[in-house]
Image (tube, each protein chain N blue to C red):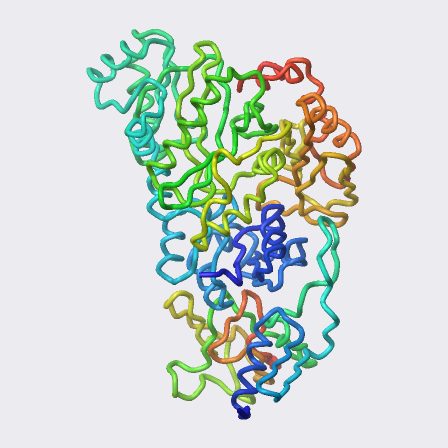
Length: 150
Length: 446
């Protein structure tokens, strides 16, 4: 039994989307040990009421929120849903890094229960970064992209 | 199917309560929050937090599609709706069912069945559960005939109404025609539904409700009753189990009636069957069924030793009831006070803001369910419940004394609270004797 790079990628993704910090796999003597970077050993049991302790395992959504590059403003998700960068699968994205946007430029789609909502930039300038990933859940207010305004 | 990840579609103390039971069961939690609740205590305890919109409930917690999308996007197996918000919205339960997400609660059809008052009343009659003498009427002739059978005083209520809105009291049969006209007109204007019904007016009524658990296959047990007669404008303030000074035969028939009602619906999960106990006649009548976990569920947990949230989850997974009726042990007495951010000196006006300092009580038999700690925000968009203090003891008097001491030891500053008001109620001689009716508070406050 061997693990392909694809298998490892899938296992990594499973860990990423879980609330666990470490994963140990033993497949007929082939051992794989994965640990979330910076993960501390999990607390045994959580104390009862008002213990505003450290949050539990790093939520997956938090992991990809990046700091706004200097001089940029975020274009925030106007609602929670699945974010799509292109009008249809296989088609080119609405915008790429380096593109210029106007306030009414469509920058993506957010799907809520099969209902497609177009998202507009709301700002004029140059797209510097696109932290939101295609086909993934974005929460309300999450930065979809960063724009350097004119 | 085992539930491994639950989306908690609520906020406040009940969200934290659900998260805690999930954690004890080894279940991951995803909490949906509004912008106003991003930094709340439940948000700090959930495994994952998803912001679903701005503070106003209509823009976040009440958005069915957004909450279901959040559950799908976070790969949650199940949704726990808590109480309020979407907990008794049949379209939400249905949408979950259609999306392959377990709704931790009854079926959408059951929510529909108990949500419509006339239908619930018909179900009660079919289950041989007593209802308040009365019924729907069309036109004056029908109303006059029915009124003669019920007797006066009687109430005219809107079919589509609730919370006491659109009610008319009739003290003499000669007043009926005018009152009927007015009630029907008001109901049409307020609820878009001009249908009305008549029912007997109970001068001294007690609110007694029964906690039931159903397996969804017709198996139902009860976990005793709760007396919630201390109410202010239909808002419960103090709840206790068992109901004090209640005739034992009446208690037993009331518990049996609740089980019959839920069994007829093949009810699934935790639910509460509410009754009005007519203190003068020694009778009881079905009021409604609440198809959700209740705010006051801790008093039942204190006397039964069960975790009702865990039982909801167990049943949602298709599990059996935790125990047989014969094995249910009701031990001692439990009383709960709701602590609200409101100002009794200013007609109980809500008092949102930031809690500067919060010190909750501890001690033998004391339990506190709260999401409020030093520095917590109390947003203006939601109900004003800060937490619940519950005391358990071998007797009602011990529980009452423990609760009074616990309230005295509680310190909350930064927002107004009803702590002092609740302490006075606990010390009231009539309350201390037990068995007050729902008019107790109104009489006391003049």
